Image (tube, rainbow, N blue to C red; front, side, top):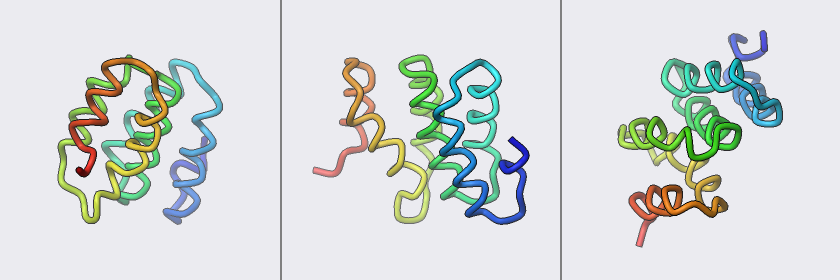
Amino acid sequence: IAAVRDSDSRIRQAAVGVLASLPGADTNTLLASESRGDASPIVRGFALASYIKVAGDAALPFAGQVMAEYSWHDVLRTPAMRVLKGMQSPAAHELYQKYAKK
């Protein structure tokens, strides 16, 4: 968890990715926080994707808010879109379709 605060964004990116395999309330809180607060939009995107993985449909309202933000080359949305594409719920499908490029 200390790696989430590392000065190197590549370390933080890896850390939020690993957290996706450690579900729990503390993980959810940390990933939601990082998806809004990290200095790097790339890390924020990976944190959001990890949050969706661990929290499932419960993360979707928050994810919709974060994904609505503009990011350079969609670095914030792209990791989340990969996760949403693999989910089966109607809410995940709807959010995916909202941002899918046609």
